[in-house]
Image (cartoon, rainbow, N blue to C red):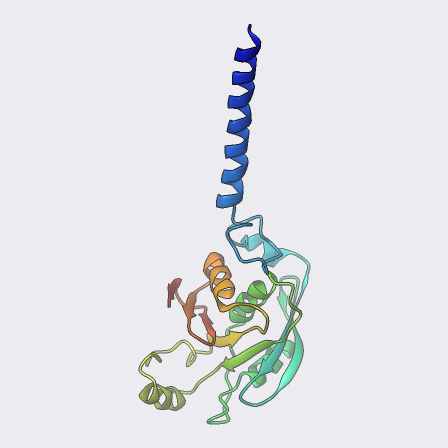
Length: 200
């Protein structure tokens, strides 16, 4: 075999390897996300097996409307911590009516799983948690974008942001998790544990 033929074959092999590697970096979920994503990037969505691991789930919550701040452990392994859940219920109360409700614990799982993708050790800034029917009606009259049959009324939704993390990155991760509803707004992200859907 001539040297020119050998070089031609090697060139074809090298180009093939280059294209394969380049395709990986373009299509891999690791590199299709923003740079501030750092954990659990080997899968396009988190496996339900993660919930079964013997881990401690803690949320750092700051409620913007009341100024309340707390670090709350709400789950250990597969068991919810009732004291932690009660504390979160109190934090996310409807400050207009001064009423609270037992929030859906799966909402806190959803929020915690989103938080795990980021290296920023900031509090999660909550803009809205539970709402009574009366509060939701009042807000929907002011803003037509607020749903009259809101998941907030059922204790299944929060509106939030994390300082230092782009809303677009939060939106991408929340959609990948397929835990419920995800809404992208100019200043916050809405998540709920209703049916899986998304909007901007």
